[in-house]
Image (cartoon, rainbow, N blue to C red; front, side, top):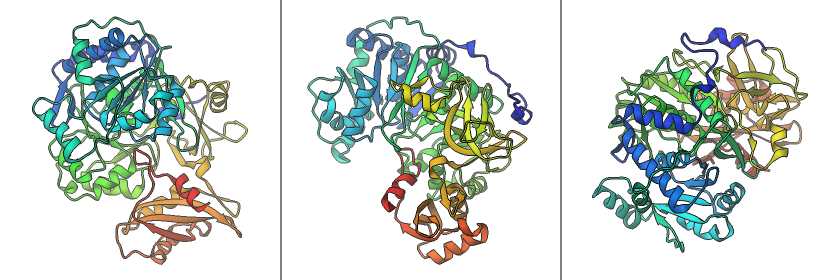
Length: 555
């Protein structure tokens, strides 16, 4: 196929990557630790681990897993914790031991946790004690044989570690009572492992690095099988794109999205590790005032997030007074970046908010906007190196440039399939290797891609397609709107009607005012029939608005 997007590539970005540059994530990690030694790698709660610290501690944890727990290459180990220094240590120890990491959302209910542990066949779990009560309720019905429990302050220096753990448990009361018959505290696991040698493990592109679960908002969560080859490919693709904008050993990236989410995992943790960058870990980004205080203490150069996170920062007192002089680029993904948010972000920070697009099934990056764009362009960007994009009709036939169809992607970052679900895999990936994303969009003749909406979120009004993203984008431009979701509800006359669910910035905003605003920008059938005002909108753990939950309420 003709790669029309290559003519729009920024200078210095190659059309393809060299997949044979690294055999595994383990190779990249160990190379970076050797190269960047005393450079800061991860910072959290005011304490920093250097690359040498990460090398030493992750080797100790890997040795503990190999020799004390007795796991073998390919065994699955679950990690259930937020952004803390413990996360990269556990993750890199798992990967360096040749094991498969299973990221678990700490906010899971017992039912969701039980499903993921059983579906993955994980035999070990590393968990923050704040969530141990959830594990307690299901562990006897899972394949878990060994548990490593961490406290929030475990990798902080004494006496700060003791103080943080004391406040977390007894002052803030963030640790519900729990009891497990057998477990190993993380500090003890690291101490034991430090006395042992990490046994070398041979890994190649075919070995599984992650079972990354997805689809829990639309049904039973499925494990996307991401191999070392998938992850190395996407790491090299993202690195090639960023290489024209960043410098080795000099970047500080704000990591507010949870590392157990594929966007933050690849874009922040792994990509900036390759470049010797420092990840500033934000444990609780929902505490916006605390988040802004943390940003004030650090001269960050890169920030990634979802639209709701950027919007939240913009509406937090003190954010506009931060020093943005070192900020090189801001990258939004996970959901559509709204024009109103992007424009205000540029006005406040002086830095454009570039949109990227990806999925769990693609490790995740598929498209990224050039990082030297001056302004928001409404596009998800250009396909990253060694990636093919095709927009297709319902019969799986490619459509001409400019026509709306389902976005399909083919490349070395596309997952092997869904764990133990061959039928689901066959539905998602056709025999030619094209992954169907479920997103509707089109490509311009210059290669820039645009998403109009999720296939399943599309609203059908009197036979006309209405894309919620477009309606939300218009509504969000009203100065009285803080957050907004557009959904379709059943209607006797038109089949479906558009309604808006809104969190107000201006408490005086009325339904009539907002509908009148939309009527100026939207053709008649797209104009919302009514507006509902709420205190908050339902969201995923990374802040993505759940339209499905709103639709179910109205059903």
